[in-house]
Amino acid sequence: MTNPAKAIRIGTMIKATNEDAAAGIAKIADLGFESFEPFFWQTTNGQNLAELGKRCIGAIGDRDITISTIGMFGNPLEGTDLDQQTLQGWKDCIDNAHHFGATCVAGFTGRIRNKPLTDSLPRYKQVWSELAKRAADKGIKIAFENCAMDGNWATGDWNIAHNPDAWELIFNETPDDNIGLEWEPCHQMVYLIEPLPQIRKWAKKIFHVHGKDATIRWDVIREHGIFGKEKFVFMRTPGFGDSNWTDVISELRLAGWSGSIDIEGWHDPVYRNELEMTGQIHGLNYLKKSRGGDFVE
Image 1 (cartoon, rainbow, N blue to C red):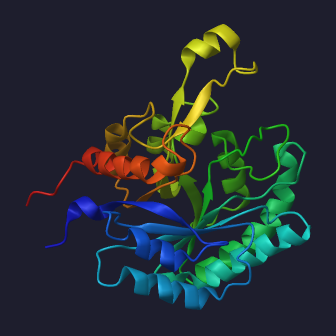
Image 2 (cartoon, rainbow, N blue to C red):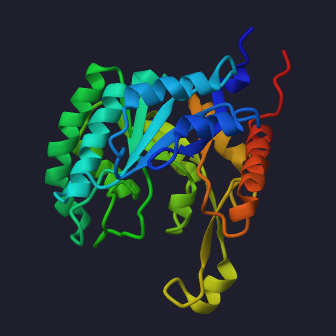
């Protein structure tokens, strides 16, 4: 029988912009990951995505591993050459997602740079209404990561989908059923927002989840505040941060959610560089345990 525990799969992200995503998958495919999210940063660098997708599937082979989501991260709302490459990258990812076996493309909304968040809404609606239709015609969902990229309501460079008040605005501009969120607790905790209740409210709009956590140093906040020289929060690999992922996954299950939780590495201040995969495998096993452990029929 199918394993109902794997209605929520645990995987990781794979760099694809300047690295061979298929080779990256092949290198770690036997470490226990159940899904992968190949992702591009700002540009696909002219890669043939149909061919890349087929090679990624080939690298998986007969293993029980899926690719539900591919990532395209950049700012598709403005007009620099790199921004336009990001916009074209979104179109190419949408058009070729099926070659990866993916049903979702994720990334940032983009933003009119250095302007209040609401100034981006007209351009957001123009770009994403068109992309939503393009994606819907191909059975693809669009998921916005809830990362502020150091932006806020007043200014920023990359993304407006980082705050629940902004989600209300953007989903009003694009009420399309196939536009939602690539959610994670970390990006809410960085701004001292309690993440767990968001699952109960927004579960139907959560299309993909990133496995990333945070450690909030409350003693630093009490002594130095959040605008001082001391760092008050660190992004962490799951298992090392403050979130109880048993609660996170339980809330997702209670909401009827299924999909992949793909670890977003390369952020943990301790488990990085030569300890990167040590940390990721710990996070993988921790998330599997938080999911309930091995399935018992």
